[in-house]
Image (cartoon, rainbow, N blue to C red; front, top):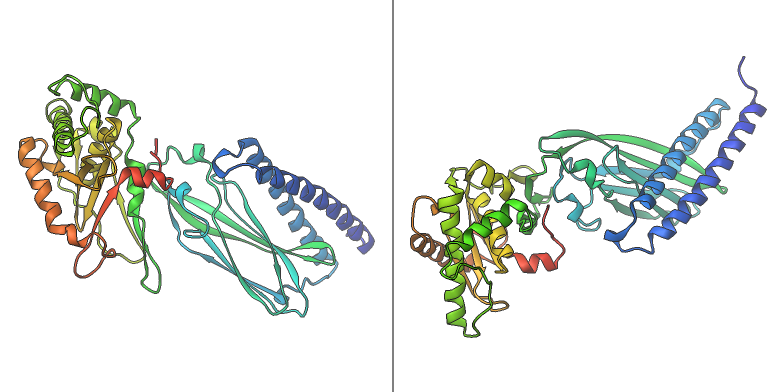
Length: 410
């Protein structure tokens, strides 16, 4: 026996009551979240937000089904919403560094075809792997508006993704009509999580604009890992004083640069004799591709464990050891290659360089000479955009990038 329209209406009334309750709970939770800085939000509040949004989604779907049973047509065409998935391969290791404004995952385009203002609620979340992102917008009559979203990852869920993994991104839109919330749509989008150690060097938009993300290599510079700490202790044995002291000990620039270079040499000798790091010819994948330029980069602990590294692996390994030794590292990126450098004195903007791929096969002096020669050749290209036909280079000062909020991945 089918329920009567009165029974359906009664059930709809009950569901709307629940919807109001969960909405109130959600708004209260969101007001609490708003009092915290982004990286200090208590996890229980984010979990509450996700719980209340999931409840609202299920209730809205049920209300829509009930309204369809009583032949109530929701005028979806009055509000037109298009969803664009900006990119489908998500860099697990650094996605939390992305900005909703600069590098969102989802973009909504909303058009209000009615003659009155409308309120829409837009939500997105990655099943299992993220918290829910929700925005409430007021769209004036005839107005066209865009909205971008970037759900916050649950870092514990993505911490051990070292192979490509499929996931589902949900998007949902609803609107407020006569004080009642009606579901417009729920869409599912297939996405992929890249392995945690894959970096996206750049994103290339349809109009051929290049978004340079090379600075995010600083996340691979991990000075606090126990393997780095142990290797630096070994490096101290190769120092003339039996210690590594960073920039301390001299105020004269020339003398300080010499003292710093002697510490870099100690690190070089430790990696050569204790680390036994072998260079593997696997060039930087820095050529222009369809939409994104990506590469797998070993974390320093893995390079030490495997006793091998390509040029960029070696650059982040050296940079990690330098940063741990209180020396400001820099990574130089050019087409097809990377090497390491260091600021000879804090704030001096003067650098010295080392060709890390020569660690096992050559002396420190030879690797140092090669590094200095290489940078001299590309110094004039540092400020040119990625993929400039005349060449390009990047001098990435790790301390400056840390000040931009890019911290070690582990």
